[in-house]
Length: 202
Length: 202
Picture 1 (cartoon, each protein chain N blue to C red):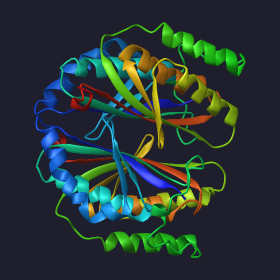
Picture 2 (cartoon, rainbow over the protein chains, first blue to last red; picture 1 turned 30 degrees about the vertical axis):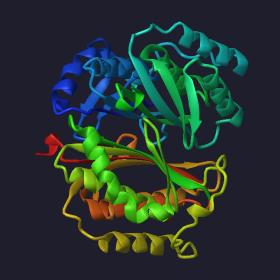
Picture 3 (cartoon, rainbow over the protein chains, first blue to last red; picture 1 turned 180 degrees about the vertical axis):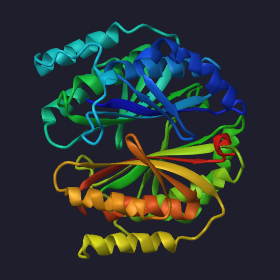
Picture 4 (cartoon, chains in turn cyan, blue; picture 1 turned 90 degrees about the horizontal axis):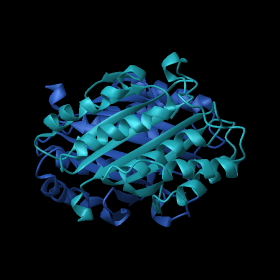
């Protein structure tokens, strides 16, 4: 299964180039498990579905620690039938897909509760797109049930769901939503925006 | 049919607030046909599918004219079955859906060729998500055929398609892709990023 993301980091500062370049070192612990390709619009991250969000978390937090209002957008995908399989995408720890939906929701909540606190408040919004057949609506409603009970739920918006809290649990919630629901090998896409240090929140 | 977008504007400048506030006047010609709601992450635009992209174009170009590296992200949707119908969303001019796919591709290309040139170069990338049943793959392949022949096609990337050119034809291409393909009343979502004045392009 091919999995990855097109990731863009936006520091709202005259020094945006310096902040972006200064953040890239945060990806070093992940580099041997990711393939990265950058162009003027985004950086392609190809790798296992379960490390995409931890890697994005570390990149985003490094930029946010500048104190500058910074946002990140990612187009995240797994199981796209048009993409060739890639050994680098093999999950580090596959989800326990033989468990019942209720047990998986509980496991996702436990993972969020156990996420490290990074002392960086963030807001996020996500849209989850199950594509093609093989995604039972039960799985989607299960994901929504998880989001609402995750401890990071902010509110439902048109076209997306908003989260808020410390970067650790919020990114864990995003990662669990991406890997924990929908057909294991099905095509799932996520459109996610993360924001820190917004003057609107002060 | 409910249609709209969650739109975020990101000027990479210390004066991002001033640039955003200074751009909002560009939405004035569209305001009577849109419902707008802003929070700290994005602005919800609810309105007819065929004016969403022209309105986003005018907003983005107003910000890009600052000369600052500016990006815009939008999560665009029509026909979401979870959203109530809204009279404000009635299309201004419905696409000629009784025409053949080949004739519709030609009509979309004609619309792009007729788009006004705005003297603002931009890059864009889009992901189109047809959701649920009722979207024939012929429609999706037809949209890709249109994008490649639109005159604004840059290249195919993982998870998205990149466009490049003057803001007029590029936004027209995005709008035609959104309204011209897929089931007329089907659920279609688009994840789109637009960029201007990037130092990577200099």
